[in-house]
Image (tube, rainbow, N blue to C red; front, side, top):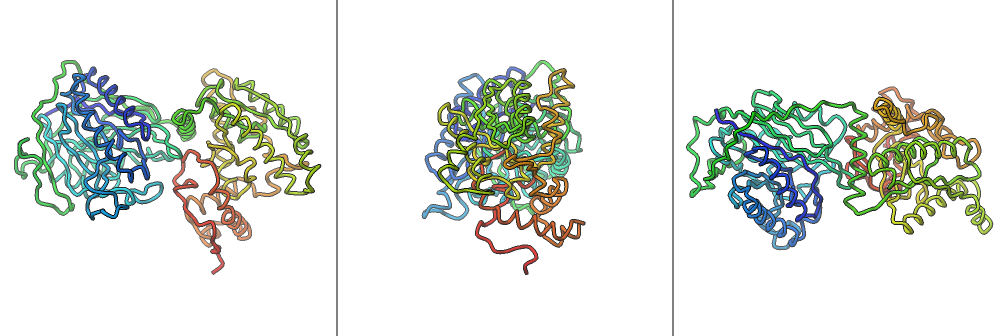
Length: 599
């Protein structure tokens, strides 16, 4: 029974930084080779980063990717790593993009995987299943492949697949069984959402059984605009045994020795092609794929030590998982976009307190500026809670009273009621943006998903900012995260970062005397249940009422959600953690007269 030392490089590429990503491949391959790895797998689109969106329509970008994968193969050989098989994702093309007048059906940009060995691109594979749901638009960008590439490396037949190929039955994994492979290498850029890690293992077990082969699954980590990738790389046998599994949200090299049993149908297949004949197509099967076989001349490098055991990382609680996603998403948005620091308003309330704690964990207290901006309606306890949080976290704390500025506006304009409340929020927004302009900070906005859903925010006021860590976090979850973060700090022997009063007091915008959120909104436990059904579950009015929600309240909440689309369209990006985040996941027209229950 052949065995192979496999390294899964769970790493963090940067979209568009092709030279930097190629350098990372060389660096991690060296580390893997030093540990005796014979095959190293990197994530989907490793060379370009993911998702590249409309960059794929730039011929210059695609050409850079194509040139980089060839240069990378040569550079790895020059590094003395030519005998390590390296599987890496990149963008290829065999024709113009579909937006071109010269486009030819069946050809165009490809989401590709390459196996590099001996200083050359030894084999390539084009992704077969292209997702076109949720945050994915791959039918817009890529042409699907129709050929499974099988590489004979030493004594093992290895199939190459890419991400969505794993999430759909049939296709590449059915073809892999027909090809009699011992190993399927699945490279991925699979975005995080809560509980997705609970789905991956059973999914891999089904695909491994379908292929009759061990599956090595590698996923990237890191933040890219609204998306965050959590890693969770693993290796599963054809019998469903989990051999090794990486932690979530950590950059690491998972190395494990894998025994590769004989493929399910190898005895019935013709012998592999020689390297001079490769690639050779085989008759297309019921899986609707051809099979192209490539034999590489180089044998796997020997390893003397061992066995290498990658281990199985411990799973964490939902709150710990979400906190890791939010901190990584913010950190990478700051670092990858070149911001030196962040600034946010500190009201003393729960939302700004949680955002401040996320920011401190993400980039360090020395890079976080918190600004208290009290008005004539700000309570003493709110000012005290903001100062207490600053002391607990060590961030740069400042106070900028807004009442003199508000009074100046009111001396020159006749405003009353809601206009005066919104004026206070907009003065605060002006202060934060002025500090951003003056000192180079990224402004963080602090509205949660519940408020965004019903439009409970002031456009160009408290919604101002370049990034929103809580954009996909409902209010009830904000409280859970605050309690978890404080308990985690206490467990580690540190000081809880969030003042208890910020957690327990009734939430209020404090824009008028005695104001609390429940003046304008239902209790958040009730509101979030309705919003979860309507937004995340796509339930209609009748379904929500059948679930036990009050009819009048359902009508009121749905109307608030529907008419607030124009606000959400102008909101800052923020890390996706749910199955349906505002933005790419949920695309509705602003001008829209349809209302639930109206027809």
